[in-house]
Length: 344
Image (spheres, rainbow, N blue to C red):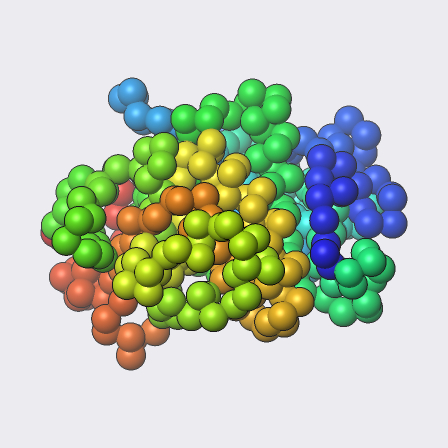
């Protein structure tokens, strides 16, 4: 394998330097919310925990430590606050030097946790983006998207081991370039507010994320993940080899936002991190990590309830994204935060 799990559970850089002060090593970085003097109090009031018996939600996203992704992170946190995303929102930042780690902690406390929400957190991990050969030696190449599966596995290992999250909690993985326009939760039971991929006649529509029922946004790669050498990647006995092309197109062309219980996401993340170096070895391109996710989910017999309404990206893509829901919103209201479903 060109990567393995030997660094998982160690919050250090690949060179062995501490990624943060010892007292913060491997921990979520938070600070008690203070009264804001910058006009954010009214918006922050929207971000509060639900009073019902709903499961806890944990939104996470993976970044490196570049200034570019600092700005992406700030914007994602801001819109999570503005639109009342429930639960915690955690930036998983991979590969910070010791100095970068200290600055990230300082900036997060100063600009995010104290100004927006104490539920907004930072989790530092080693760098996972270095490509390795079959002997585990670095090739000098990088694949930045290794950070996503290995980073979320690092976070889940720590949170589940410390029991700071429950296996029944809901984990939502988004990308750092996604802006939240309204809360994302486990409940999609208002069917008029979502666009589902129904699959074959035997598939019963799922409306809530539960154990064994992950959800995700549809991405336009169909069953192309099946073109990879699945027997070499997941083993000759893998269930991923038994998935039919129609099932592959209906329940596995998954992309962010991904939603699953923490128990299911942990199982997916372990296989995702195991498979992604092998997929990248035979297919060293952008989509390698997404194909590895599909193979991991199929191997674990976790077909997804796919939606087309969790994301919009390109106005020319009329099918496969949630543009028809956007078109229901009056022009004057397009930029307003929507905590409720006002336009279904």
